[in-house]
Image (cartoon, rainbow, N blue to C red; front, side, top):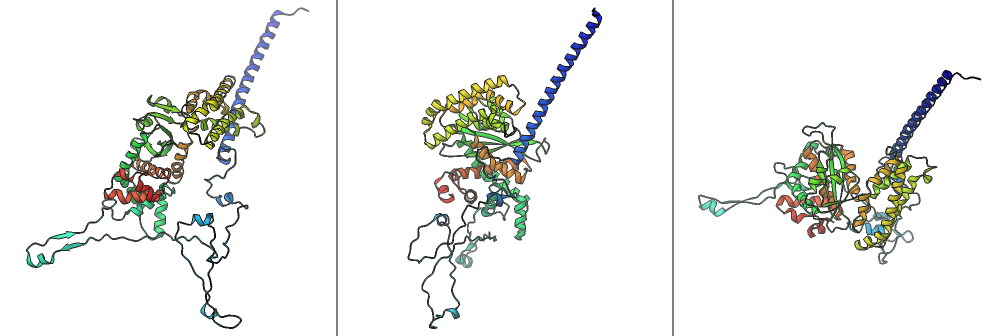
Amino acid sequence: MKVDMNTAEVWHEKYNKSQTEVKELREQIEKLQKQVDWFIEQLRLERARQFGASSEQTAVIIDQMSLFNDAEAAADPTVPEPEIKKTIPRRVHKQKGKRDNDFSNLPTEQVVHELPENERVCPDCGRPLHVCGHSVLRRELVVIPAKYLVREHVRTAYSCRNCEQHSDHTPMLKSAVPAALIPGSGVASSSLLAQILNNKYVLSLPLYRQEQELNRLGITISRQNMANWVIAVYKKYFDKLFDLLHKELLKSEILHADETTLQVLHEDGRKAKTKSYVWLYSTSGDTRRPIVLYDYQPSRAGECASNFLAGFKGKLHTDGYEAYHCKLPPEIDVAGCWAHMRRYFTDTLKSLDAAVRAKTPSQIGLNYCDRLFALEKKYKKQELTAAERYEARLRESVPMAKAYFAWAKKEFEQNPMPKTAYGAALTYAVNQESWLTNVFSDGRLELSNNRAERCVRPFAVGRKNWLFCNTPAGAKASAAVYSIVETAKVNGLKPHEYLMFLLERLPQGIAPEDCLPWGDDVQMLCR
């Protein structure tokens, strides 16, 4: 059979064309399938963020941010009810339990319950009864609500009777009166300002809610007044204290840094919805003078950190933000965060079906990270010094980290998919290797930057309540007050007492140097 060459060529052309179309269709299907997988991955991650446990630990814990389910979430039927203490004679000494010790620093008021006079009769012989003993049945914790009063500062004038009678000039003397906390404001006292600041910056209670509560008590103080007072005490007193803490912070050899967003409504040349930032700087865990500082900046540019850290020479713990790596001066050596590295793998696993998680490469990466954290936990339990921890890391942690990066690079070459969660984890590992490895260069460094993240959390929680700052001046004042109360906390002080200490002494001319949180007087009065 003779085949027409023209027909064969047509068939061949159609065949090649159909093969090309099939190939294109397959590539298109593969591309679309990748997009579908990516969308499914993002959906699962979003569901995990919204409905899953916020903790990255293996054990399930109660989410502390649950505001409306706290009773059900915290309920535990296995916890015994506080018991009424047994009736015992006063002459018997009972060993104090934990609850007694918890209340040992509180004043005690006894309410003695007695029978009415007409019932103090013996049921057998009818003779009068006498008191033969007392027993404590229960100990209640009583709350006395805050009491507001008006304090009038009265100045006394003195005159000379003899000069009044025998001289044409009578000298007058007047008693000294302490300076007002805020010149021009007779209402703002140190105790009132300390309560307002503690409510907002420690308890995250916005000024408008404080205004409402004061109105319920019959006290009219507007939120605008309170905001003006906060800015006034910042400019007059807290700004100098912040500068002292800043200078002390720069003397450290190891610091932690992080940043978070802030909205400032009225800022020159910027729209109200434009993001501003608060940068966080904290000393490390080995310092004797712990400090936590917040710095308001209109942007997230690396120059913000570079300017604030001018004069600092040492190691800086950060996350993987690029500005820390390329904008800081050479005398600052950046160390990475393995908690961020680990988080990439936990996010990847959250985007997968539970049935296949244990068999995926992401679980291998997570296991590497968990082994490193397990070693750190062991070193902490052994109470190793910084030098001993450095040597132990060289023996155990560094080989583990090298094996991890060798595995990550091999996986990255085989799975170059940075747009997937797993690809992002591998990309982070490859790009951040030098900074993650730098953690092992000093025994004082920590494996993660969680210290900075814990310090950011109070500001983030407060921001969920008061939402924004009205002006840059308010943002700077808020950053300074947060710095003071958080530094007080890490120094073992009660924030309210420390604010009272500052507001009572700084207006009277006491030097800020004498009011630093590690001073002897502060430690004695504010712990």
